[in-house]
Image (spheres, one colour):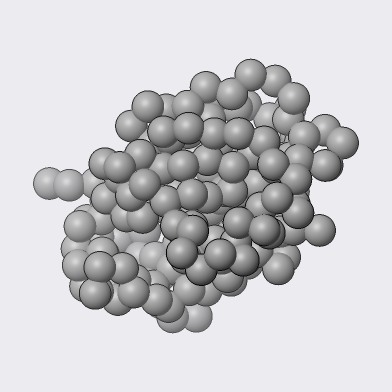
Length: 169
């Protein structure tokens, strides 16, 4: 049996659970939580490139550390868990909620539907990439990230793109 994740209805209400592979194959609604990591002064954002072995959006760039919700898990708890797993960050305070959106898109010709919960933390400590998830990372200003996002050929995860207006200054 594969990893079990929470499934949701189209309105963002949890309805049960299913194997991740089934959720992706059938385009079931699910949820993810992501954390925007900013420098303490708020001037820079931590951007990363996903590994080429990721099941979804492999090799693409992102500015949120995050992942899918486990059954019964609330988004804020998932955000803290994913932040620790992917970047080795344990924030001193709870992440601040930034935005919520739904993405009904496609990945490799199949439907992909996800309710997205975005948070922010300020961080100036060490960052330790989980090698299975993060290939590389660096700090950029909002302007630098916007300039890259203006290039439609730059490989950036499509679900985070729907949140960008609420994330960047």
